[in-house]
Amino acid sequence: MKYLTIGHASYDITFTVKEFPLENTKVRVKNHIDCGGGPASNAAYLLALWQQEVAFQGVVGNDYYGKKIETEFKTVGVDTSYLEFNNTSNTMLSFIIANTTKGTRTILTSEDNNVKKSSLNNFNKYDVILVDGEEEEASKQILSNNKNAIKIIDAGSFKKGTVALCPLVDYLVCSKNFALDYTKMEYDGSISSLTKIHQKLVNDFKNIVIITLEDKGCFTNINGEYKLIPSIKVKAVDTTGAGDIFHGAFTYFISNNYPLEKSCRLANIAGALSTLKVGGRYSMPSLDAVLERSEDIDII
Image (cartoon, rainbow, N blue to C red; front, side, top):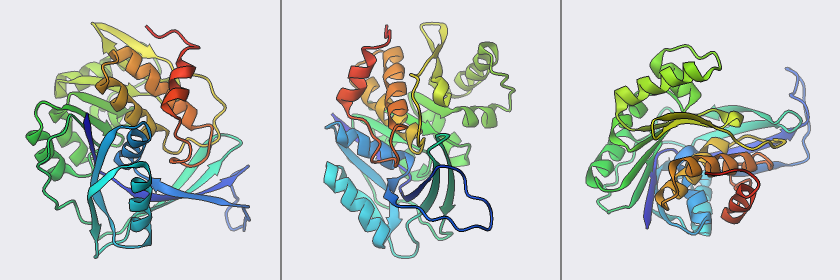
């Protein structure tokens, strides 16, 4: 089975602290963790880690960090034929302060205004395609050229390009923030309000919709029944990349003929396990670890 993920790639530099720094102070940390990041990029890395044939398409700067991202991909076997190096912009950097006491993180992103979009024509055939909305035009061309593929979007944030791609996929897997920003509806924490939001998304985009709810799991409709599919309880130290890992895991399970509910539950587990370690790439659980943990909970 051939996978393609297309979209955003960045480089993450994570500093771990036990409490958030006060403004106008200096803080020394013993170490920091560097690795690649970005929704589609992390999903590709996870799929390769789980021994899948996967390619990534996107743009990085022709610089030190862009080359680091390429090296990381090659280390796990991601096909980088469509990783494009741009000479006029720098690789996007994210500086992350991970509060390991609370399991929260604060992200500062350095974005180059001259970032170019992917210009490489990709006429290959794929069985599964995951897009994150960052590469609208290239994604449209590839989705159109692969009508029989399983098509998934990671709709993490509300952007014009992401919305434009939503009707073109089979599975719209979106964050709560995307769902609220798009629908302009109220969410009071109840199933009834989630149901109305979900119905609006399905009516507009005509696909299978999964709304992710961070540590609370995810919400979808299965055979006419609305379900809040819970995650597992963990003591999180760093949530960076957990959503990306959820999407990569969901892509793996749904494309390997797992039922929708089981795919969601296992993706929840993968995302939760990733919060036990610092750094998006270094925190990715093995497939065996996810499947082993699933034995502790009821998966129908």
